[in-house]
Length: 290
Picture (cartoon, rainbow, N blue to C red):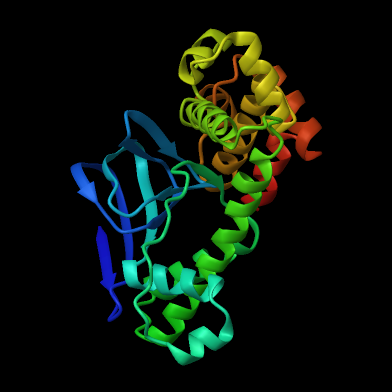
């Protein structure tokens, strides 16, 4: 089932629930794309990104991509697409002073810059704001003033996430030349996206080294500098959070979830889950399905 709503200002809301879909060539305005259940695969810029609950993907205006959904159960996806003018006006409100905005309220806005097309953590205020927006969308609320307020606030919250996840984090890489820092940050983001997208598979440092086009030792050093943990520790966190989501939203037995998220045996999974979340997987699942 697909539902599309186009507002009078050309902002769009899109929701889809399916277990099988393929779209060979799509292009959209700047968009934020989430999955509340299941997963969705994107192919863009010669890389594959899988979006799971707990993450959102950003696509820039004009990006061409393929996407597909092939899951055991229905996947629920939700995206917001911002029109060029809406996004440009929002950016102009950030950079222009009040006098300029008052004297030229309808001045033509400049073209906006692109964002890192990568996976971001879907949590806290942005998550609650978009889930509330999805709730109103699913209920077919036709109050455009309310919907656009949610969209405006979504942009504000995304910019806060972007500032933290990209601008602040990239400064941890100690390189004098900004161009070198930007390039290394991009390569490390590719590694991070690769681990999230393939977290159910066995992943080695050699594989990640090829994704980053960096030597293994150089990758390990820079990754730890950027994310404050090793690639192995980061992958472990991704798998545990994925397991937590499956325990919360599905009826899969624990022994199946262990393999689905990439752990080799149940005992290490149970031990790590309890260490990180202070509860066993069994008790967590029982509590959420009580």
